[in-house]
Amino acid sequence: MLEVYGIKNCNTVKKALAWLDEHTVDYRFHDFKKEGVDEARLRRWVEQTGWETLLNRKGLTWRRLPEERRAQVNDADAAIALMLEKPTIIKRPVIERDEHVLAVGFDETTYQERLG
Image 1 (cartoon, rainbow, N blue to C red):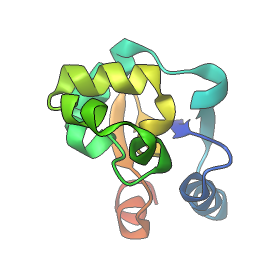
Image 2 (cartoon, rainbow, N blue to C red):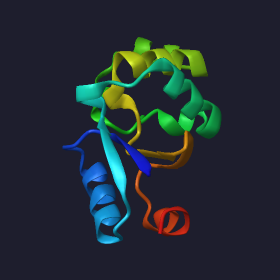
Image 3 (cartoon, rainbow, N blue to C red):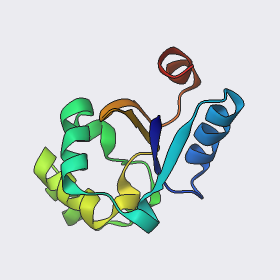
Image 4 (cartoon, rainbow, N blue to C red):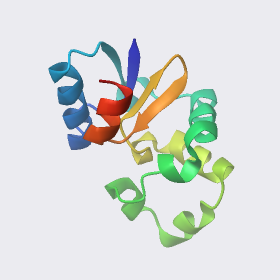
């Protein structure tokens, strides 16, 4: 079964969940806000995708950070520390199966290729 990580009220997550439902893909949803995310999982995701892919620099959480704090995020350890502190800064959804990341964000073509 797929594990879908995100925030329930995120529009991108809503699109992804709708796609999964429409294509009758079984999944379990993990809400960052309610359940958090642990460091070991973040490190595994970063190893598989790169921290630059996982860190959402387009979202409100990133834009609200002081410039000096943003400048400090220049490697995987700094990115992971920030994502642990502010899970809403993780690009979402993150979809994994058997601890392997299949997708970050929502892209219908990617979903069709990897999940359909």
